[in-house]
Length: 134
Image (cartoon, rainbow, N blue to C red):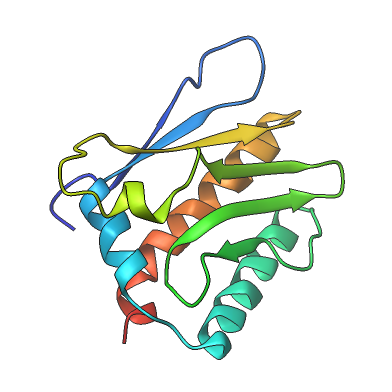
């Protein structure tokens, strides 16, 4: 990959919550790429394995937008720990006049391990994006 697709921000605040900027073109591409439910489930299985390696356990870490490749939320805990797209609107995302980056914000992150796990899940999704679209 020759450009930055995603970037974590607000990492140095007193809490462990953070945000991620996602390249708008990438998000639009993921939204317009349709995926079979079986592939969504397979990526969720990989995500479950990743989460378990960090000593956490959640049965469905990824939430896709309908039948697209766009992940709108990453979950890692029973206590409501997630990283989710900020005020998602399909109409807003495909608006060609909107040039802003797509923002994801975390919720209820209580440790650096949880923050790192969420970033690892996000990175895994980006890494498998080309495979998902096929």
